[in-house]
Length: 60
Image (tube, rainbow, N blue to C red; front, side, top):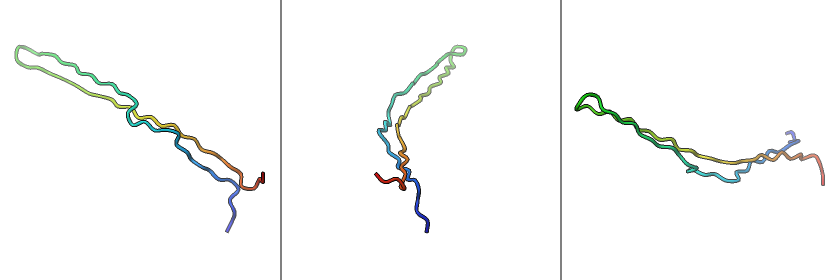
């Protein structure tokens, strides 16, 4: 077995599942009786994280 020289420690500062979004629709008419509609939306998610690299061989 071999000892590790470095250790990586991950950390999530915050996570936001609803960081905003965009929605819209476009409609139109063809002729007298035919209508066309197109809609859509876009949702944003955001997270901030960091990784700490520590040496296990250094004594403090």
